[in-house]
Image 1 (cartoon, rainbow, N blue to C red):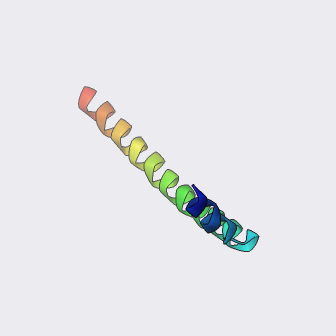
Image 2 (tube, one colour):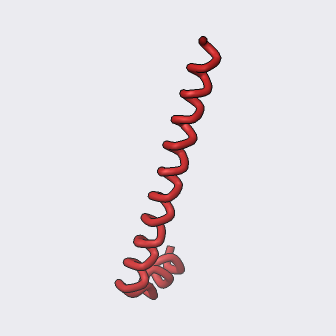
Image 3 (cartoon, rainbow, N blue to C red):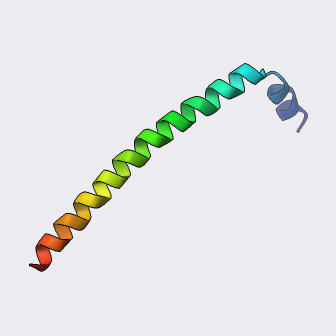
Length: 50
């Protein structure tokens, strides 16, 4: 437990903000891809019903 506390104490606020920003950017890109893929799947499945 002490080892974890020492590692977390080594992070500066700037580093944490940068990491969170990068994660948010990657998540927004992946969410866009997932939404488009889901729309294509729904369109494909509707085409099978016809």
